[in-house]
Length: 309
Image (cartoon, rainbow, N blue to C red; front, side, top):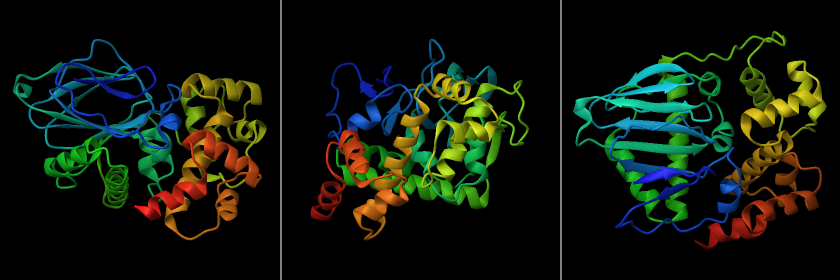
C-alpha cells in the first residue's frame, strides 16, 4: 500500500514491494517541505482515510467501479467511476465512505506538483477553478484506464524520460480540457473579483498572489510588489502566504523560476544566460547557485544529460 509522508513524498509500505523509481536530479527539490510533493502515480484498492490531509499537488482520482464520498475543506462530494476527477490537494480533503460496488475495484491517483501545474500554459479558467478550490471532472472519453495504467507503468519503470513524457501528456490533457470544457463537481470558492477587503478568506489572497507571481516571473518580484496586488501590508501578506502554502513567498518565487528555467532548457536552443534572464533571475551567478542547490547539477549538465540519452 502507498501513502504520502509528511514531506509530501510517495512511499510504499508492506511486503513484496517493487523497486522504487530511480531518484531524479530534482529529488531534493521536490521533497523539501510540505508545500510541494514529488510527481507520482499510484494504483491501489480504494480506502477510507482516517483523517483529512493536504499536500502540494494537483491530485487526480479515478475509480474503476463504485463511488466514494469525499469531503474537501468541509464540502461533501461523491465521485463516481470511469471519470478522472482533479482538485488542489493543498486544501484539506478526506475519503469518508465507499459504496459496496468498490469491492474488488481499483483507484488510480496521480500527484502533479502544484508548482509544475502552475507553470503549464494556456489553461486559463481551469487553473483559476482548481486553485480556487473547485473540483473538476474531465469529459467522458478524455482519458481511459488503459492510458492511466500505461502512465503508472512509465512512472514505476524508474526511467526519468518516460516519466517526463507522462507529465507532458498530462499537460496536453489539461490543455485539451481547457479548450473543450469539463464538468464542475464543486465550484471554486475563491472569488475572482479584484475587491480588496480584509474580510476575504486567506486562501483568496494567496491564490491571487500566486497568480501574480506566475504571470510576472521575468519581472522583479518583491514582498512589497506582491502584497500590493492584494492591498495588504507586506509583512501580513508574506506571513499569510507562508501559513497557507507552508513555504516562504520568496522561496516559492525561486521554485517557480526554476521550474520555468528547467522547461526552457528542453524547449529550444536558448543560451543559459537567456534562460536565466527569461526566468527572472537577476544574475547568472544567482541562477547557477539556485539551480545547483535544487537539482544537484548545473543547467548545462542537465541539458547535456538529456541530449546524451
